Each structure stands twice: as structure tokens, then as C-alpha cells.
Image (cartoon, rainbow, N blue to C red; front, side):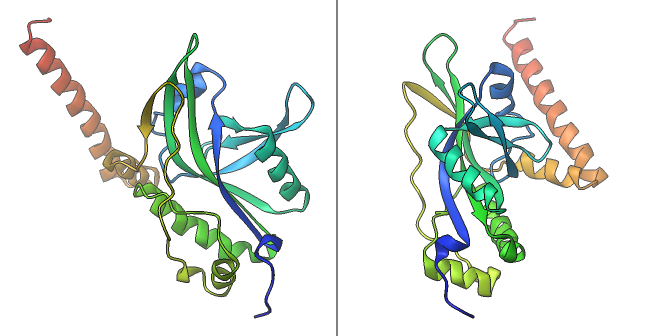
Length: 219
């Protein structure tokens, strides 16, 4: 295989995103935004008529936008015809101001379409590791990129990337894929047994909460 510059075919980095309202923010703790989910990036014009990158989850809902610098970078890759994906890493809420801020981080990954098959396999493997609560580094060196192009199954995660600190009082909403997320994955693959188990799990939690409240004499 001919040698090439990694930047000619691949880009990867963690990027912070911010939800713009409470409804969008609340969805970050819901079942449609699990750590390790792979979504797309779409562009809309902001108030200054600049291209702003928005993360769109696998179910068609926007979950937040990236900052102007990253938006500009990704817009250039889109103009080159590259594929762009994101892998959800964690979601958080920071208390501050009147309403606080829902935000999170995702690994944004762009790649040249001629190697789409190889990098789609890499993204799937990366997403599985992210779902386990690891934070593998998406910023690959030339050797790693060349190895993935030659054999996507050869990729192994390196050092874990440290989570950033939120401003003010910050609560991490999600930082790994839970058992319930995995049950829902099975249900969405149209496995009826897992769907029933998922609802049974939710009903059991509600029943337990009701029993505790009743035991405390609250009703």
C-alpha cells in the first residue's frame, strides 16, 4: 500500500457540544442518547451567517451544536466530500446562570470517502469502546491511520483521554453505556423478549419507588 499523510484521509478529535434549550438538554439523559451512539453532523447558518455544526442522533433529533472553530473545520471537510460521524462520549449539566447548561463531548471523526468502508468499521469499534466508558483517543497518528486502511480490525485503543472539567457545579449525566441501554439496543433490533424485559425493568423501578414512599408514610 502506498504511503500517505494521515491528514489527507482522516481527522479525529473530541469536541464539546452545547444544547440550546431545556427540551434538547433533557434528552441528553434519555434513552435516545446513549454513550457510544454514532450520529451524523449537519450544518445550519448561525446568527452571523456562519456554518454551525449540529450533532444529530441516530433517531433524527439534534442534541447540540459545536463551537465556531470546530464547525468551520468540519465544514471544510464536508466541502471536500468527506464523511463525518460523531461518537457520543459523555453528557453533563453545569449549574450556573438562570437555567444552567446541558452539554457534553463527542468524538468527531471525518474521513475520505475512498476509505469509507475501513473507517466505518473503525468508527463501530471506537463506539463500542466508548460505550464501555473508555475514552479512546480519536486523534490518530499516521501509522494508526495507515494500519486501519490496511486492516480495520487491527485498531486497538491507546491511552484513555481525560475528561474535561465543567464550569461551576457539574453533574455527569452519562459516561458509559448502561445495562438498560444495552437492553434497549436489543429491543430496537426487534427482539421482543428484550423489549418486554426493558419495560419490566422500568415497571419494577416505579414499583420499588412507590413501595419506599409508602413505607415512609408519604402516601
